[in-house]
Image (cartoon, rainbow, N blue to C red):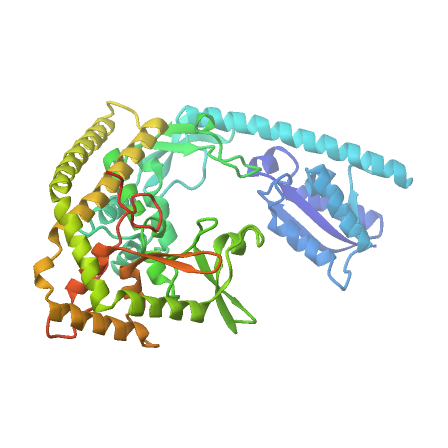
Length: 541
């Protein structure tokens, strides 16, 4: 019989204190010689658990024996616990191997010839192995948690910015470890936080730019080039605040544990709480989900504008027949339930042309523009006093909240208070309130600064004509920018599109063109949305 030998140990300690890989393979080879079998190949796996199933060498062995050539008649292990600790996974794997006429044989757990009795014993032994594995795991986890709670480091690779050092406290395998600051790496960590919050010229940098800059300077992350994920991991790692959080996830299910079940080990601090929170807030303001820039990056004209009147979701571009057809479809129907919404499917080209024509023919007409500007002027004039009062109140409330946040930062930095989860959530709420107030401040300032008297009759006529010409051009590079500037949304109903615009935005677009020139390129700055969506509605007053 041709056989494959498989040996495994979970840890180096197991190899030293139990039966090593070499011993397992030696016993299998001795048995094969006595029984006149041929060992066609041996597989050895070090430091891999048979309970989690994450075993590269094991997977290679299974692929080898299941190949079309059928190179072996059996897999031989020292004990079934070397093959699998999970009894259900073992049964599934053995059934798959039996279809290929490959048996699994244990040297230390021989089975009788009777198939039913052998199957019963195999399952009993499998359940015992699984129970023992779970008990061992529970004991190891308890020891590791206790070790972390006492301030020792359990891992093999410390976070970037730190190095391991060996204490004189005995452990089961040598001596316990702790973390200390690695000066060269720590200076890079501080530089990354500074770039994230201040940049080089006072403008905060994103993780991609930071990675590019570090590589340009010849800096590495332990011998490797910097990638975006490396930078993101560093600016999001709470360990630099002086606490290494472990046991965040369940090792088997990968689910996050509640904060009360995590272990926080004190380690040397590299970044203070104020720097960490500023970096986090800076990242949030650049995330696409918090800005309108995602719609601008889309190649379609109406992404971010088309909204379903039935479920409120946006419409997204879909294609069919290998890209031959392109259409807009409600996100609910596209992503979760094809019958979950009554929103119609709209052909992309016809829909975009209909919206462009409607804006050109119904909004960008001189008479219509005069009416819109007149109504806006009257509205602003009527509410100018209340707007100024509202603006003063917003500045006052915003300054108060900023002072409170800064005070909390100072208290956390000086260790007067701890940055617990409830405080972190409170800071996040206050920061979002500050950002929402800034949106309203910007809106009111813009209304106050609209250049009413600079738009003459001739200016309006010329601008309207140029805008219309730009929109009806089939290859216009500016059509999307103007549509985004003029329209807030286009709501898709059963048999019509309802367009909603913003008078102030339209007035700003009209004012951007310089009289007597063809210079009229709209400029945009992504701002926080007051209600965390793509609709730039102001907060209620």
